[in-house]
Length: 249
Ligand SMILES: Nc1ncnc2c1ncn2[C@@H]1O[C@H](COP(=O)(O)OP(=O)(O)O)[C@@H](O)[C@H]1O
Ligand SMILES: [Mg+2]
Image 1 (cartoon, rainbow, N blue to C red):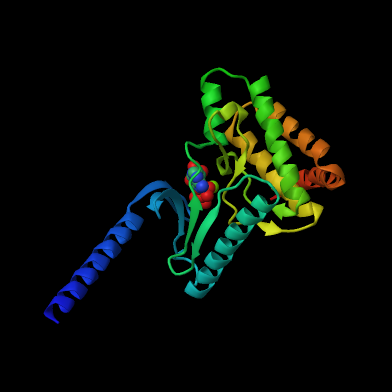
Image 2: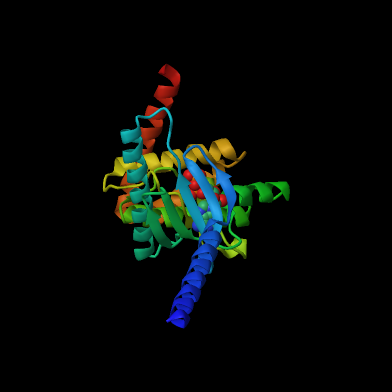
């Protein structure tokens, strides 16, 4: 009897030890970025390297509204990341969505570099924005966005920080991330606004990128069929509205 109790005690303490260990492994995190909406960590999870995207409460919002918005963004993000993969658009795998901790656990894209940093590096190395290397990248961006929109996925926050490349960077696919503001919509309007946001983001982040943007848009139009043609037409209207807004407030 005493022996049996001792054995149970041993099993219990080894289970406790295991729980302690896995808890600590899960908790060991390294901050990657801290944005306005939340934090992104690098962590170990079930023996692999993952990215944890954690959203924190916004003090200025009513707590109920804030909880609702956070939940909707997490759902939108997990949904769009997975939907993209179904259509062959490269995105990180979604491992888990935790509404209690407001965290999404994603595949860590190893050695990835944002398109933003890639362009900065290129500029540092005197590579011109209308060089073949850069126009190739613009072409890949145009293609992936045409595919995204032909499947009616609106990204909602297209910037060069939300696109990743993996080594060898020159021949990498463009991997899309950060889908918290995404939606599903068939209308040309939302797709045109998506492109407008990207155009503004590129031109304001990276100098001399007019040829780069032009290349991305013309490849988008060429590879996206009728849907893309309508979007590009619509983009002109969106730009006009944008300019009027800037002029007249
Ligand atoms: N799956 C991932 N693999 C590797 N790095 C990532 C991954 N997801 C995000 N990152 C890095 O974290 C940064 C912020 O992530 P992002 O999803 O864009 O959140 P935020 O809403 O803070 O912009 C990215 O620009 C990228 O550098
Ligand atoms: Mg981002």
